[in-house]
Length: 191
Image (cartoon, rainbow, N blue to C red; front, side, top):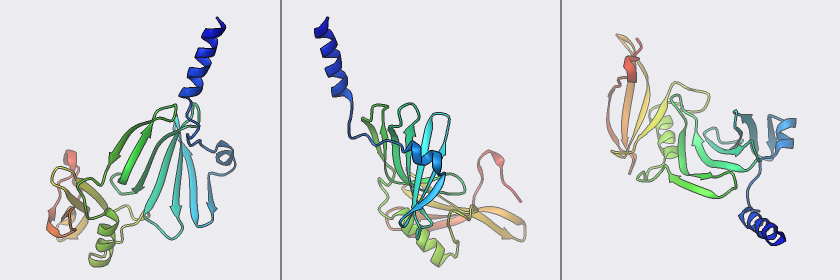
């Protein structure tokens, strides 16, 4: 019987991952948002996870986002992203972990896109005067993974009113491909 107990304890110790990043629950309870050096840190939560987001003070675009299991405070996923009008656009690699802290999957959102989202946004801000930033939710950047294109979407005002518009760029080099009216999904076009 003792031997079975020792074997179970040994297996439990081997299965524990001492390098697992843990959520800082004490800081979360004290502060929902604070500054640490040049980094702005904010916390939120869902039913099953705590969320930690970090952004450099001088960078209005890129956010580091970590999600932690509420059950044991272990890291659940980590990614970098930019908030968009439509949905966040992920940058680089996203990592997912199981509840024990073991890496379960890696997804590279930039695969096939040599021209970065950040470079595209800088170009749109300077050459198209779009002013894409987290405070301005009227523009969005989406990826077409099949064609390896970026789509910059926004509303354009003309003599017929306000219409959804799209400019398409090559994901390999950022070169202009085409532009035109954009039909919103589900017939949700607005005038």
